[in-house]
Structures are given as C-alpha cells and as structure tokens.
Length: 162
Image 1 (tube, helix red, strand yellow):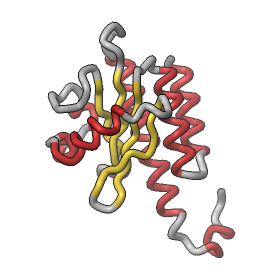
Image 2 (cartoon, helix red, strand yellow; image 1 turned 180 degrees about the horizontal axis):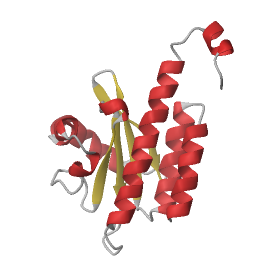
Image 3 (cartoon, rainbow, N blue to C red; image 1 turned 90 degrees about the vertical axis):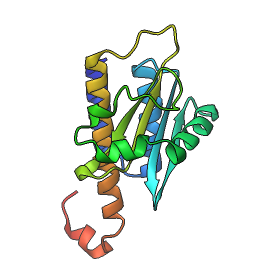
C-alpha cells in the first residue's frame, strides 16, 4: 500500500482542479486503504462542506458527518491540534471505525479526510495512519495552491513557471 499511496501523492501534486482532486483522492484512498467509505470535507467560508465521497452515491456518511462537523467539537479540536495525528482516535459522533485526518495546509484547518472501515476489517495500523496523514497534508497543500492560483491575474500565470 505504501508505494501506491506514494504514487497517489504524485497524482495529487499534478491535479489541476479541486473537484477532480477530491474525487480522485476519495476513490483511491477507499481502494488503497480498504475503507468502507471515504469522505473529504473542505472549508467553504465558515462551513465545512462535503466535496467528495467514495463510493459515489453513498451519502449516508455525509449525513452523519455533516452533523458531526457542525455540532461536534472535532473541528475545534483539530484547529487547536498542533500535530494532525493528535486528532486520531478522538471519541466523536463520527461513525464507528472512522478516523478523521485533518487537511491543514500552512497550519490552517481547511477540512478533513474521513476514512471508515468495516467492523470486520482490522483497524488502521500506525503506518497506514501516517500515510493517510501525509495524503491529507498533500491534499491541503494542493487545495491551497489551486485556490491561490485562481486569484492570480492571468498575465502573472503566463509568466510563472508551471
């Protein structure tokens, strides 16, 4: 799984659109980490909104997590956490078996990567958690880059290296 997640990080760095990025990451993380469901939430103004879920069409995780992200203390805990791994294993209203990985580029909470496994699957081991923390970090860095790039005048983009 490590080499495939490393390859995924390369794909993240090459993504050109936020929607494509989140859909690709949710689908690939679900497959590679053997997750039942994966959801990616990103900040939109003051709110955290679902941007992608895998498998597609399974919105049940979105309902549970929408409540969790609005009413639970998870986001406040993630904002206060210096190290993203500190947020793992917190008891919240997230589905049983789910782990929340903060998406935190440049120290600012942008969202969360939520991975849920079936009860019969083994829990995420420390190496898997570390890799998923890295994936969440790379997603955050790319989202930050794409959002900043969308505010740069076209002339500056033409002059900037790719």
